[in-house]
Image 1 (tube, rainbow, N blue to C red):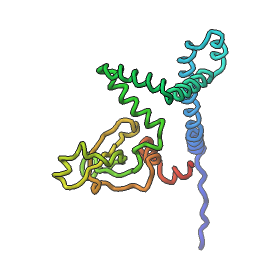
Image 2: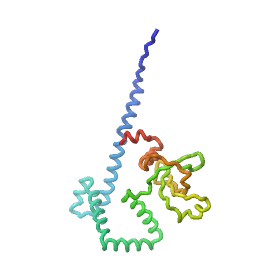
Image 3: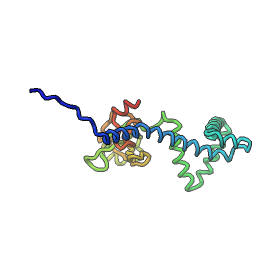
Image 4: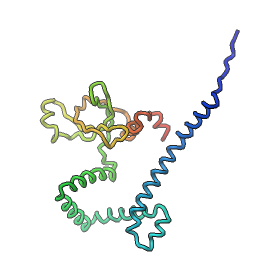
Length: 218
Protein backbone atom coordinates (compact mmCIF):
# COMPACT_ATOMS: atom_id res chain seq x y z
CA UNK A 1 0.00 0.00 0.00
CA UNK A 2 1.72 3.28 -1.13
CA UNK A 3 2.60 5.77 1.54
CA UNK A 4 2.32 9.48 0.93
CA UNK A 5 5.35 11.62 1.78
CA UNK A 6 4.62 14.89 3.53
CA UNK A 7 6.94 17.84 3.24
CA UNK A 8 8.00 19.09 6.65
CA UNK A 9 7.80 22.83 6.98
CA UNK A 10 10.60 24.53 8.87
CA UNK A 11 9.83 25.77 12.31
CA UNK A 12 9.08 29.51 12.58
CA UNK A 13 12.27 30.21 14.58
CA UNK A 14 14.37 28.25 12.10
CA UNK A 15 12.81 30.10 9.19
CA UNK A 16 13.42 33.47 10.86
CA UNK A 17 17.05 32.59 11.62
CA UNK A 18 17.74 31.41 8.05
CA UNK A 19 16.03 34.48 6.58
CA UNK A 20 18.03 36.79 8.86
CA UNK A 21 21.35 35.16 7.96
CA UNK A 22 20.48 35.30 4.25
CA UNK A 23 19.71 39.00 4.59
CA UNK A 24 22.99 39.63 6.38
CA UNK A 25 24.92 37.77 3.68
CA UNK A 26 23.27 39.88 0.97
CA UNK A 27 23.35 43.31 2.61
CA UNK A 28 26.62 43.26 4.58
CA UNK A 29 28.96 43.27 1.53
CA UNK A 30 27.24 46.42 0.24
CA UNK A 31 27.46 48.08 3.67
CA UNK A 32 31.14 47.24 4.05
CA UNK A 33 31.91 48.47 0.53
CA UNK A 34 30.08 51.79 1.04
CA UNK A 35 31.73 52.27 4.44
CA UNK A 36 35.23 51.65 3.08
CA UNK A 37 34.69 53.98 0.11
CA UNK A 38 33.24 56.70 2.35
CA UNK A 39 36.12 56.33 4.84
CA UNK A 40 38.70 56.58 2.06
CA UNK A 41 37.06 59.64 0.48
CA UNK A 42 36.69 61.37 3.86
CA UNK A 43 40.33 60.68 4.72
CA UNK A 44 41.57 62.18 1.44
CA UNK A 45 39.23 65.16 1.78
CA UNK A 46 40.50 66.00 5.27
CA UNK A 47 44.13 65.78 4.11
CA UNK A 48 43.49 68.14 1.17
CA UNK A 49 41.29 70.73 2.94
CA UNK A 50 44.18 72.58 4.71
CA UNK A 51 46.11 73.19 1.47
CA UNK A 52 43.15 74.62 -0.46
CA UNK A 53 42.68 78.37 -0.81
CA UNK A 54 40.53 79.83 2.00
CA UNK A 55 37.82 80.75 -0.52
CA UNK A 56 37.37 77.11 -1.55
CA UNK A 57 37.57 75.48 1.88
CA UNK A 58 33.88 76.03 2.87
CA UNK A 59 32.72 74.54 -0.44
CA UNK A 60 35.08 71.58 -0.10
CA UNK A 61 34.00 70.86 3.48
CA UNK A 62 30.32 70.81 2.48
CA UNK A 63 30.81 68.75 -0.68
CA UNK A 64 32.17 65.20 -0.16
CA UNK A 65 34.70 64.16 -2.76
CA UNK A 66 36.08 67.60 -3.62
CA UNK A 67 39.36 66.86 -1.85
CA UNK A 68 39.63 63.54 -3.66
CA UNK A 69 39.02 65.24 -7.02
CA UNK A 70 41.69 67.85 -6.26
CA UNK A 71 44.13 65.10 -5.26
CA UNK A 72 43.48 63.17 -8.50
CA UNK A 73 44.03 66.29 -10.62
CA UNK A 74 47.22 67.17 -8.72
CA UNK A 75 48.65 63.66 -9.08
CA UNK A 76 47.85 63.66 -12.79
CA UNK A 77 49.63 66.99 -13.26
CA UNK A 78 52.65 65.79 -11.27
CA UNK A 79 52.82 62.64 -13.38
CA UNK A 80 52.68 64.72 -16.56
CA UNK A 81 55.38 67.11 -15.33
CA UNK A 82 57.63 64.21 -14.34
CA UNK A 83 57.79 63.19 -18.00
CA UNK A 84 59.55 66.34 -19.20
CA UNK A 85 63.20 67.31 -18.82
CA UNK A 86 62.74 69.59 -15.81
CA UNK A 87 60.54 67.09 -13.99
CA UNK A 88 63.04 64.28 -14.51
CA UNK A 89 65.85 66.49 -13.21
CA UNK A 90 63.92 67.43 -10.05
CA UNK A 91 62.94 63.78 -9.47
CA UNK A 92 66.52 62.58 -9.99
CA UNK A 93 67.94 65.15 -7.56
CA UNK A 94 65.25 64.40 -4.97
CA UNK A 95 65.96 60.68 -5.14
CA UNK A 96 69.69 61.41 -4.85
CA UNK A 97 69.09 63.31 -1.60
CA UNK A 98 66.82 60.57 -0.26
CA UNK A 99 69.42 57.97 -1.21
CA UNK A 100 71.85 59.53 1.26
CA UNK A 101 69.45 59.07 4.20
CA UNK A 102 70.01 55.60 5.76
CA UNK A 103 66.50 54.73 7.00
CA UNK A 104 64.45 56.92 4.69
CA UNK A 105 66.00 55.44 1.54
CA UNK A 106 64.93 51.93 2.55
CA UNK A 107 61.35 53.03 3.16
CA UNK A 108 61.26 55.06 -0.05
CA UNK A 109 62.78 52.27 -2.15
CA UNK A 110 60.29 49.67 -0.93
CA UNK A 111 57.33 52.00 -1.32
CA UNK A 112 58.44 52.96 -4.81
CA UNK A 113 58.61 49.34 -5.95
CA UNK A 114 55.15 48.59 -4.56
CA UNK A 115 53.45 51.60 -6.13
CA UNK A 116 55.21 51.04 -9.45
CA UNK A 117 53.50 47.65 -9.56
CA UNK A 118 50.15 49.29 -8.76
CA UNK A 119 50.63 51.97 -11.41
CA UNK A 120 51.65 49.39 -14.05
CA UNK A 121 49.60 46.24 -13.37
CA UNK A 122 50.46 44.83 -16.78
CA UNK A 123 54.06 44.49 -15.54
CA UNK A 124 53.18 42.57 -12.40
CA UNK A 125 55.18 39.41 -11.77
CA UNK A 126 52.17 37.54 -10.40
CA UNK A 127 51.42 35.77 -13.67
CA UNK A 128 51.28 32.14 -12.58
CA UNK A 129 49.54 30.45 -9.67
CA UNK A 130 51.06 27.29 -8.24
CA UNK A 131 50.73 24.89 -5.32
CA UNK A 132 53.77 24.82 -3.05
CA UNK A 133 54.58 22.10 -0.52
CA UNK A 134 54.96 24.44 2.44
CA UNK A 135 55.73 24.68 5.36
CA UNK A 136 56.38 20.92 5.54
CA UNK A 137 55.98 17.87 3.26
CA UNK A 138 52.36 16.87 2.75
CA UNK A 139 51.02 20.40 3.36
CA UNK A 140 50.26 22.50 0.26
CA UNK A 141 49.82 26.26 -0.01
CA UNK A 142 48.92 28.65 -2.83
CA UNK A 143 51.92 30.51 -4.23
CA UNK A 144 52.72 32.92 -7.06
CA UNK A 145 55.72 32.74 -9.35
CA UNK A 146 57.34 36.16 -9.18
CA UNK A 147 60.66 35.72 -10.97
CA UNK A 148 62.27 32.99 -13.04
CA UNK A 149 65.58 34.78 -13.62
CA UNK A 150 67.18 34.20 -10.21
CA UNK A 151 70.66 33.18 -11.28
CA UNK A 152 72.32 36.07 -9.45
CA UNK A 153 70.81 34.79 -6.18
CA UNK A 154 70.76 31.02 -6.59
CA UNK A 155 73.78 30.40 -8.83
CA UNK A 156 75.84 28.23 -6.41
CA UNK A 157 72.76 26.37 -5.17
CA UNK A 158 71.59 25.78 -8.72
CA UNK A 159 74.95 24.23 -9.57
CA UNK A 160 74.71 21.78 -6.68
CA UNK A 161 71.07 20.87 -7.39
CA UNK A 162 71.42 20.67 -11.14
CA UNK A 163 68.08 22.46 -11.56
CA UNK A 164 67.16 26.11 -11.92
CA UNK A 165 65.38 27.73 -8.98
CA UNK A 166 62.54 30.23 -9.35
CA UNK A 167 61.16 32.79 -6.89
CA UNK A 168 57.72 31.99 -5.43
CA UNK A 169 55.73 34.20 -3.08
CA UNK A 170 53.47 32.36 -0.62
CA UNK A 171 50.90 34.77 0.93
CA UNK A 172 49.46 34.40 4.40
CA UNK A 173 45.69 34.24 4.83
CA UNK A 174 43.68 36.42 5.14
CA UNK A 175 46.24 39.25 4.62
CA UNK A 176 48.12 38.45 1.39
CA UNK A 177 50.56 41.35 1.78
CA UNK A 178 52.32 39.29 4.45
CA UNK A 179 53.97 36.06 3.38
CA UNK A 180 57.14 34.21 2.47
CA UNK A 181 59.57 34.46 -0.45
CA UNK A 182 60.83 31.00 -1.42
CA UNK A 183 63.33 29.80 -4.05
CA UNK A 184 62.19 26.40 -5.32
CA UNK A 185 62.83 24.09 -8.27
CA UNK A 186 60.00 24.27 -10.79
CA UNK A 187 59.67 20.48 -10.72
CA UNK A 188 58.41 20.72 -7.12
CA UNK A 189 55.53 23.07 -8.06
CA UNK A 190 52.05 22.17 -9.27
CA UNK A 191 50.50 24.60 -11.75
CA UNK A 192 46.96 25.76 -10.93
CA UNK A 193 44.58 26.61 -13.82
CA UNK A 194 43.40 29.85 -12.18
CA UNK A 195 44.73 33.37 -12.41
CA UNK A 196 46.36 35.30 -9.54
CA UNK A 197 43.21 37.35 -8.96
CA UNK A 198 41.04 34.28 -8.38
CA UNK A 199 43.75 32.68 -6.25
CA UNK A 200 43.95 35.80 -4.05
CA UNK A 201 40.18 35.58 -3.51
CA UNK A 202 40.67 32.10 -2.08
CA UNK A 203 43.47 33.30 0.20
CA UNK A 204 41.52 36.30 1.50
CA UNK A 205 38.32 34.27 2.01
CA UNK A 206 40.25 31.51 3.87
CA UNK A 207 39.30 29.03 1.15
CA UNK A 208 35.56 29.69 1.35
CA UNK A 209 35.30 31.13 -2.17
CA UNK A 210 35.17 28.37 -4.78
CA UNK A 211 35.53 28.48 -8.56
CA UNK A 212 31.75 28.19 -8.95
CA UNK A 213 31.27 31.16 -6.62
CA UNK A 214 33.83 33.23 -8.54
CA UNK A 215 32.12 32.49 -11.86
CA UNK A 216 28.67 33.34 -10.45
CA UNK A 217 29.98 36.61 -9.08
CA UNK A 218 31.22 37.86 -12.42
